[in-house]
Image 1 (cartoon, helix red, strand yellow):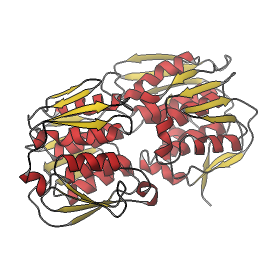
Image 2 (cartoon, rainbow, N blue to C red; image 1 turned 180 degrees about the horizontal axis):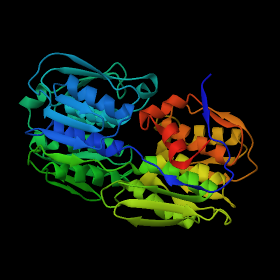
Image 3 (spheres, rainbow, N blue to C red; image 1 turned 30 degrees about the vertical axis):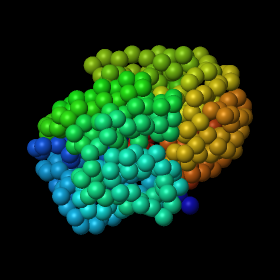
Image 4 (cartoon, one colour; image 1 turned 90 degrees about the vertical axis):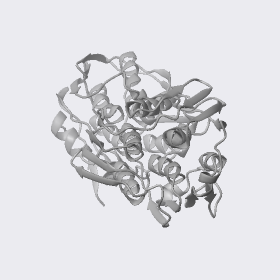
Length: 427
């Protein structure tokens, strides 16, 4: 069995880590470019499996896309007039499956979206309902789940309702998916009901759309998209704040300092707020010209925290691992919905932390974590890249903690293990 691990360090860490481009921004920009008039060039694009699934899916839908490293040229867009049947395998890429389902509703012909076992179990019912509401035909053997076949032929004969109602308490990605195709529907108004989950991602979607020429307004209860069409152009993808959380966490656990370039705090990635969480736990943070430095004096104990992580839920595993090494208990709140991510990010995370000796209680909307003496264990990441990358960092505090199935990190950061070792001199 292949395993990966980091060993406890004898001295505080110091270094510079290069993280990939934002997967979330990359996928939104790719969709906008593939629906735009004119060609586009995207630089700094994420290199993980999720992004490649998106590129392959858009190619299957007729877009002409070329890639060299982290630069992507979108030469022509999705062929909306095509009547041929196509099949798209999204693998385990939830964002790709959801955004591409919406794009498929613009095609005349049928598109079948499927994926790996883990993705087939993730609910999509609200998205499928919204696509039916705009006039698409949506069929599935299990209503609300993949595989699903979507055709937009009937959509062309029907007028899209001037306002649709969308549940905000299920997944912001469903709403983002409708936002992304709205300019090609002649504009759209979405009335949001319930408490919006990860609403900050709607702001990210809007920011990317505006860069390509769309007119978008996001309010707590409404999203309005105008009829302005996307225009091709140049787009630079920022470095990924979610990926940056792992070298930040390494320094929080072991002490020292790390620098990461290409991180802007004002371009829609809600995970930028993690810097405030690290500060509350005892780290020092500085930013200059989009380069962020995080440091911690190893002689000072980490402080436990009580925090609502609903706006940056992808970083719950990262925070849980830091909290496991703190001097007191921590409480993570507002994230009940992450049970339906790549893994059960509450139950599975708690189980694996428990194997390492950490006392964890799964609560209705999060986790309570009480640090305890760590011991060696082999971590099962449950096919979840974020569990693998975060839980591996416990090895900096306790020898003998390793991760099975380490290649799962390819979903978002294929070079994670080598980048961390070279950037921070980790064994």
